[in-house]
Length: 322
Length: 245
Image 1 (spheres, chains in turn red, cyan):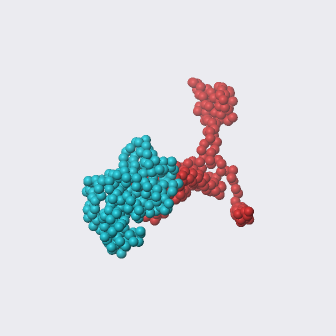
Image 2 (cartoon, rainbow over the protein chains, first blue to last red):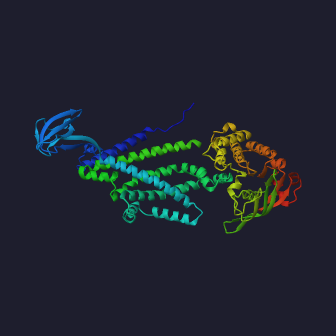
Image 3 (cartoon, each protein chain N blue to C red):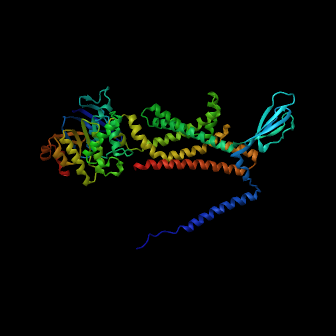
């Protein structure tokens, strides 16, 4: 019995590897030409770092004794002018004084060390929560606008059309500036609120169009069947049309929310310290321009990939009834 | 049970011409009566049927269901529709719900029945139409005939006083027509008031109390099936019967 004929895949996969290696080599040569020195070791400290908080003597005096307690040491200082001894706690490893030693005021006694979250982690968190909140609000705005867009009432319909066209016809960057400098000033909004508001309004317009298309893609017979059973227009929308529409628009919605995460980088222009702004700030102190931008890009990629996986999983769950 | 008085439904044609899909139709359907509406395609019989539960807004005239006028401003259309079951040509089952949920949803939402009560009712009806074993399947797993029987059960779950059938077998493969017609025949025997738009002449002959022949939006002939099929008076009914029989 003849087997199914299949064209060989490996020459093409080989070519793919060759192209990728070629690109990497090109990148390497390019940075060689401009004599760029890579300092990847400088990057991790911007995720998290070991912070040393110096402990100083509050008064001039003599160290009475040092009591080790675990990893810490409690230093007791007898003030020069007499009175109650003062206690300072430092980590034993960083201890700089001995018992009996006399210390001046503000003298360095040691340090307390702790892990601190670096600006990259902080920026990543700001990007995630700003995207999440504005996505959520945008979803609500989009749902309402999408329904208004399909309403038989001309006022609602035209308001929805106006809003959608206004948002889709202007750049997000300009919208953020208008929202922050104009609306934000008039209503006295915090910059974060202004940023989230601008993003939510932006994504809402796109979600509205996606939802509208989804609702229109559900056959008329579905709502006719529901209405014939005595359901009201609202009940029909909630139980019959929207669940089916939502399932259909999940892929375009996923794309929209992934775009939102990337677009949220624009709020850095109104001085919200998101991932992009953190990156810019770090570069001014680390001088590791290329490394930081590559890292920032990678972080965005991780977030968007995770989101796209979650939505893909949701999509498969909804596909049960197909 | 149903009174129709001078009903008009006018569609706006593409070139601005008004098309009278239902043109001055008056008739009555008594309680327990089975009326079959036949006629060539485009004769307005489906539109007429859809006017009976207000699914199609009509332009003039009066439809009275069980003493309630559909056009009266106080009338709650949703309240009337729950008393009028409808079965569609393309079944229109809810694809995102299981068969059982298809039957229970409107009972719970519209009739405000408890889940257990609604499920009990649903299972009884599914047994009656012979597909109780498919209760937890999604509609897409069912054949056309099975889907249409579920659709009939779904309409019956609301305890309607009248059942409207809009070409219930037209979208079915020929071998599945019988199972759906059997359910409808049983329903007629139980005394359900039914208005059926169909091309199944056998069903009309066997089950109908009256046959309405429609063309150009008008009822041209209204007669018992024996009379209509043996000696139609209208020349257009005669030509139509010659073509389909």
